[in-house]
Length: 48
Image (cartoon, rainbow, N blue to C red; front, side, top):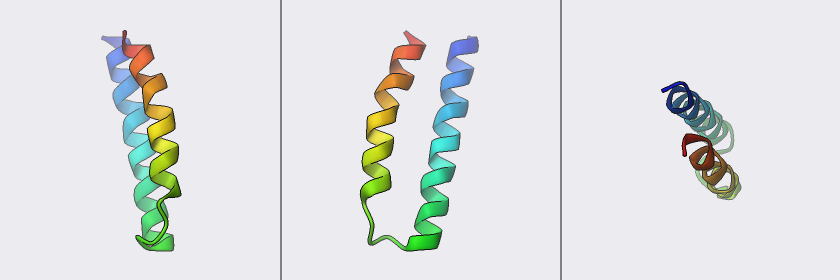
């Protein structure tokens, strides 16, 4: 349960980072999505 909560918190922080980046730069840049796609598999490994 603790790992699940940690994974949810990490995902929420990443979503906040991407959302703030979109607010600052606009939707033209796609690099933050690639960063999130790279980080999320490691979060999936934490849950297992």
